[in-house]
Amino acid sequence: MNQLVTTLTRTDSEEIRFEIREWKGRDFLDIRVYSRLGQGEEKFPTGKGVSIPLTEFQAFKEALTDAEKILKEGRRPE
Image 1 (cartoon, rainbow, N blue to C red):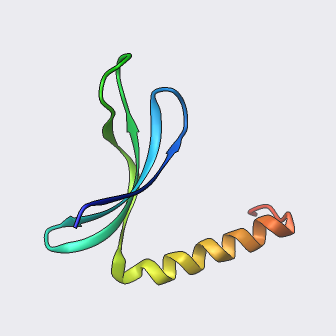
Image 2: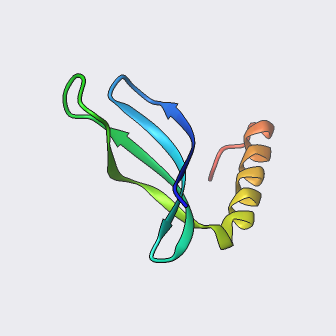
């Protein structure tokens, strides 16, 4: 299963793509920076990103919720 979830624009030449991908028979949430070298060229995946096995998705989601709570409280990392 390979399916684009959403894209966040960083700059004119970079974006962050959230995709559900299969690799070696396992499914992952892949969050990766895509970039292009020149104007009009297709964007390609860079090494900047993370792949989270879907078996760990719930823990990842909980970590994001925890991070959101900290940000709303205005606390900064130590």
